[in-house]
Amino acid sequence: MNPMAAIGAGIAVLSAFGAAIGVGLAAGKGAEAIARQPEKEGSIRSLAFLGMVLAEACAIYGLLVALMLFSKI
Image (cartoon, rainbow, N blue to C red; front, side, top):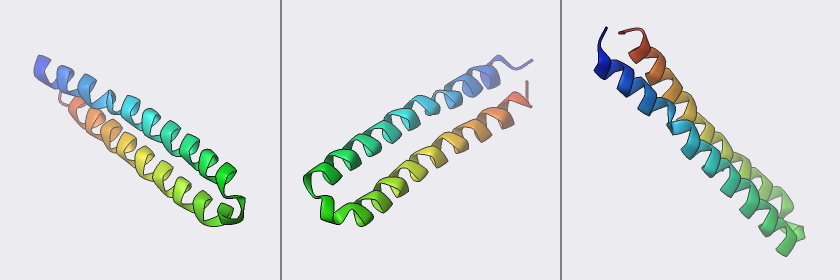
């Protein structure tokens, strides 16, 4: 067993916390922007979803790296 791979996998899984913060910020700011300018709802919603998707993609990459490192254990 390689303990460094286990530590690396654990750190890679922590990227999910950053993604959760990013999705929360994107959703909160999107709702705030729609409340301020309801006539721009369509464009604001699409940009908020884009931000959420990019944040989740980073979490998926972190999970992929963790699984790759876990296979080395």
